[in-house]
Image 1 (cartoon, rainbow, N blue to C red):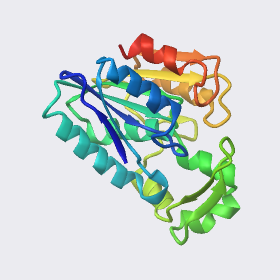
Image 2 (cartoon, rainbow, N blue to C red):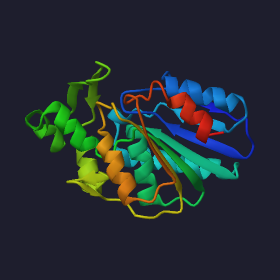
Image 3 (cartoon, rainbow, N blue to C red):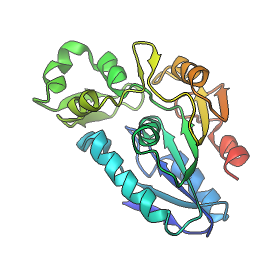
Length: 228
């Protein structure tokens, strides 16, 4: 399933939802409303991160970016939680020339580390070795999640973690305008990670909001102020 609203001939926003989310989430609804007002065109699709690997997701994203860059003069990315993780790794490894702005909403910088903390390393041993899928209940949503057996091996072999052992593994300067928004009450991704990232990487904007992981109270205001 995907959403495509070609309402602006100049700018398109590709949005990547979070790990335990989908196109029915409130963020997609708010972004779609803005797109329907002509502020930008919008493309979003169900990413199904759990069923595949980060490498394959990045390949799909690259195909989308290259395709839409043939039609639109300016391309923006936005990523929520794990969608931010994918977006940052796309900038880091693919270095796309057509992307101008990147909006990160409570982005994950260490999806593998956070998964190990939530599930317990003992339960993850065979998953880390690529021998079996990992099943656990997501703490915020209560959803039962099954993650592909190749997911962790792929992250470890390709070095996709952006923050590891307190270090930011990302270029200090990039040609992209990076906007970071994170809730101070986030119980899923520590706001300290965004503070560390913003201290280490040149970002256009970093706002720490009095909000939760989903930015329930502030997301619409952020979109109105920064996305047209």
